[in-house]
Image (tube, rainbow, N blue to C red; front, top):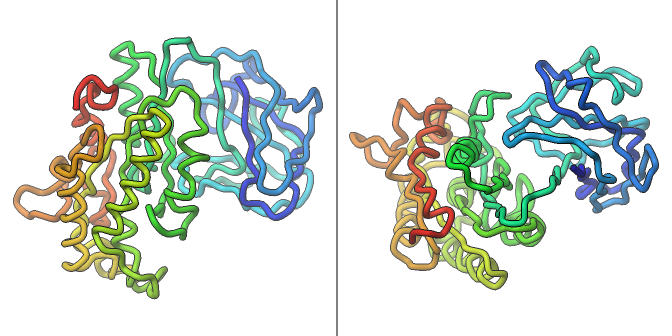
Length: 348
C-alpha cells in the first residue's frame, strides 16, 4: 500500500510532521495491530511543494476488498486547508496540539465531514484486474447520504462487483459542485480529466454523470448569479471532448443521464437553480446521451429517479429533501439499476 498526500491547491509548502495508516475501527479508532507509520524516502516527515502530490514509501499492510482505511497526519505548523475534498461524507477527527499518529485512538477536539490533504491510496492489484472511474458531481459524491455508511451509488456498485467475484476496482472521482465547462467549487471536468482519470492505472471504463450544475448554477441567486447559461449544445460539445480523450487512451466511456431537478432548492437562497427553461436544457442533453451515439454505453438514471406521476420531478421516496439529491434509498436504487455488463464492456 502507498498513501498519496496532496498540496495541489496550496500556495505554500505543506509540512507533514508524521503520518500513519491502518485498518479503520469505530469512531475514529484504528486497529492497533495494523497501524503502520508513513515514511517518505525513509524519513518520518516531509515537505510537499505547492501544487504537488507526495507518495509514501510502500507499506506492508493487507486490506481485504471494501476495507476502510484510516490515514492520520501530524501538522506541526499552522496550515491553511487548501487541498480539501469538502463533501467527504465521512468523519475526519481533529486532535488538539500534539502528534498522535502512532496512537490507535485519541480524543478529538473537533470533527469534519471532509478529507484533508488525502489524494489517493494505492494498493497492489492482481494482473488481470481493471478499474472503473466514476466522474461526476455531488450526486456521485454522495451528498445527502448517511455519513460513514458508504451509501454513495458507486459504493453499492463496488459491493455488487465484489459479490459477482469481479476483479474490478471502483474509483470515485466526483466532487460536489463540479461542472463540465466551468470552474467554481473546484476545477472543471475538461481541466481535471488527465489528472483524475488518465492518471489511474488499469482504467478500462469511465462513467460520466455531470452537467446538472452547468445548467443549474448560472443565474441562481446565491453563488453564481452572473455566470452565463450554457446551451445544451455547449454541454454536449464538452461531452464529446471527454469521449474523444477517453477513446484516445483506449478507455471506454459510459454516459449517465441527468436526474430530475424540478423545484430544486425551492424557498432557499439558491432557488433559481431550477427554472422551466433550464429543464428544457436538461431534457435536450439527456436525449443526446441516450441517442447521440457518442458514449460506449448509457445508464438512464433519469428514468430510474423520475416520479412517474410528475415528470421532471425526483421521486419523493428517493429525495433527500432538496429535490435534487437522492437519499440512501435513492442511491441504492441508482446502483441496482446499473447493468454491470454495460460498465464492463460486454454490452452496449
